[in-house]
Image (cartoon, rainbow, N blue to C red; front, side, top):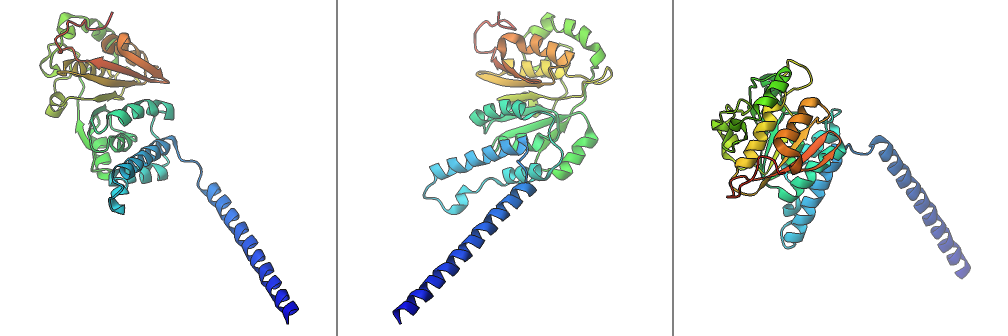
Amino acid sequence: MRPKANQALNFKVLLLGVFLAFLLLFVLRSSLSLSKENPSPSPVTQTLLAKASNSKNNAEAEATSCSPACTKIPRSLAQALIHYSTSTITPQQTFKEISVSARVLEKKSPCNFLVFGLGHDSLMWSALNYGGRTIFLEEDEAWIEQIRRRFPMLESYHVTYDSKVNQAENLMEVGKGLECTAVGDPKYSMCQLALKGLPAEVYDIKWDLIMVDAPTGYYDEAPGRMSAIYTAGMLARNREEGETDVFVHDVNREVEDNFSKAFLCEGYMKMQEGRLRHFTIPSHRDGLERPFCPE
C-alpha cells in the first residue's frame, strides 16, 4: 500500500504545481493587460498623486492610534485626482513649471493663494492648497459660470481690466512715476497700473502665494497682464510682514517678460523654469527703508 500512497501524493503535488503555474501565468497576463490599458498618469495627476501620498503618510505618522477613516485623503483631493485622471484636457503649464509652484505650496500650505486666471488647472491648485484659501480672478463671466457648474467648490470672482496690450509701452513709463513706486494699498493707489476694483477680500487678505496667469495677453486688443503683475507686486510689498511668493507665467512674451522684471524686480527673482518665473518679494512695511527694487 505504501508505494500507491506515494504515487497518489506525487500526483497531487504535480497537479498543485500545474495549478500554480497557470495561476502565475494568469496574473502576469492580467498585469500586462492593465498596464497597456492604463498608461502612465499625466504630469498633473503625478503631482496630485504625490500630494495625496504625502498627505496620507503624514496622517498615518501623526495619528497611529486613530481609526482607519483618519488616513483617507480629503474629498476635494480625491475629486481632483479623478478629474485629471479621466480628462483629456491638460493645463497649459508643463510638469516642470507646475512643480516649481507645487514645491512652494508643499512648504506653505495650508495658506492664502491668489490666482489671476480660472482654467483647467484651477482644481489642481485648490487641491494642492487643501485647508487653505484659494481665490481665482477671471475676466470672462461666461467661463466662470461654466467652471462653477462643474466645480462649485472653487472660489472665483469676475474682474474687469481697462488696459490693452498695445498700451504696454506707455504703461511701463507710467509705472516709473512716484505715484506707482510708493508702497501702499493698491485699492487706494493713484497709479494707473493699480487694479482698484477687485473684491474686498483681495485687498484684505495677507497673500502667501500669488500666481499671474491671466488675463488674456496674446494679441494687441487683449487686456494684457500689465496691471495684474504690478498689483501682485504691490500686494506683496504692502503686507505688514513676511514675504510673498509671486509666479508669472508666459514670460516668453514681451509684456510678461518686461513687466515682471520691472515691477517684481530681477533682484527678487528666485528662478525661471520654462515660461514660469518665481519671485520672492518681502514686505516693504517692516520699518526698513527698502528701494522699490533691490540694487
